[in-house]
Length: 286
Image (cartoon, rainbow, N blue to C red):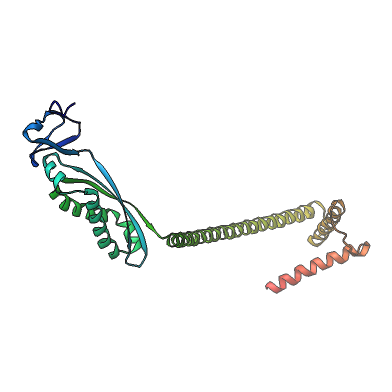
């Protein structure tokens, strides 16, 4: 019906190419336009101005001889002011863009090692975008943005990389565990040293208290009981401690059996042995 009435409709975000007797005449903006076909005017076609995206997968090789698939995403659109160039100069803009992407990627990635390729994805994308912008602007297209969305090495290479990373992390974990055990052992040794030191201080104080107590007892007993000597008092103290020890051994429920000589003369023998030991120790220190 529109052709019969010489009217055409152009949708939003779209332009139409008008020809007159087969020659480009003008670009029709969105809306309704009169197209007198009887005067040689005709509609050559439509051109969308919407943003389009093209995903390109390119296989190439890195500098360290690893084959990878590089996936690039190109966002582009036709320019309204150059619609006649975009319509007439290129029959298939997607194929043209894909060819430029292949060319730039296969020229950039082989200069990089695999690890560097992952780190320099933005540089590769910038190189692709600059080359496309320079080439496609002459055909009436604008390159909005170019992204390197993925770099996929071979499955065996990815597995090897994961094993390398896992081994490195296990090595770090082993070192950390060893350092932790080292710290624990050092702290334990410091604690034992401090415990032994405090135990030694306690034993020294205990012995000092025993000596002070014995001295006070000997002096007090000598004063209160005339005619006794310090030797007599010390013998009595030793005998008292001997019977206290026998009492504690007998009262303990889980004590082992101890066989010692016991009788009227045993106490005197024990006293003599203790005194002789003290005298020998004193002579040794002198």
